[in-house]
Amino acid sequence: MMMTSAPFKAEQGLDFLRVYLISDLKRVGKDRFLHTIEEALQGGVRALQIREKDLSPKELLALALEVKALTQRYNAKLFINDRADIAVMAGVDGVHLTEASVQAGEIKNKFPDLIVGVSTHSIEGARLAETQGADFITFSPIYETPSKASYGPPQGLAPLRQVSQAVRLPVLALGGITLHRVSECLEQGAFGVALISDIWDSTDIKQHSSEYTQNLGGNTL
Image (cartoon, rainbow, N blue to C red; front, side, top):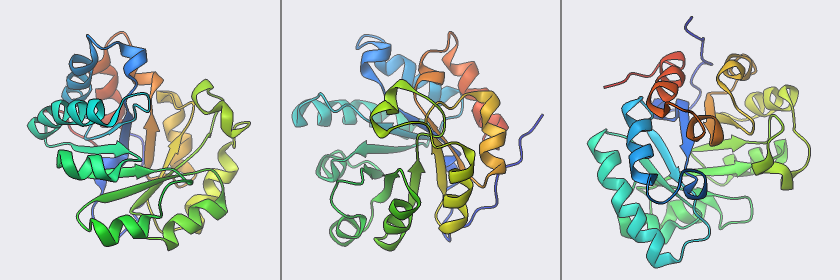
């Protein structure tokens, strides 16, 4: 059954963000990294964030260039976590900032062509990101998940609804997302979902990605 997605509130079209996949080199392994990314792209994922904080700037740039060759082939958007300088050097589409990063507005002033996402964990943080010029935000953690344990207990669906109503930006639900939880996130006003483990841990990444993108209105090649 097709899940009904929330109405798009932003002025510019960001439909590619319905499924926002975040990389995890340690989870999939270096040898399989590019292969698994291509499988996700084949499944219809059109927004990918490279989030590899353990890499040196040189290693991150090299990886970004390799991944960019894949995302361009599938007409997908590529984001770099926290490093706008690397994003610009690699010629990718955007950067994803944390609440502790430089402000979105500063990035927009220096690099107006970059799409800027911001991670948020409160309604105040969401409003601030909007004020500072973010194009979209993630809000987390919605459900319990080890990757977001440092941000405290899961927020739940009620705060997701409050944040989605408080800003006009696309809000992506993040943290503990699984396929059967997508519909209830959308019902609370989320524009889409951001995720890591549920796709990368799948035994069939292409098929599982396709299930996400089809349910969120995407198309596979």
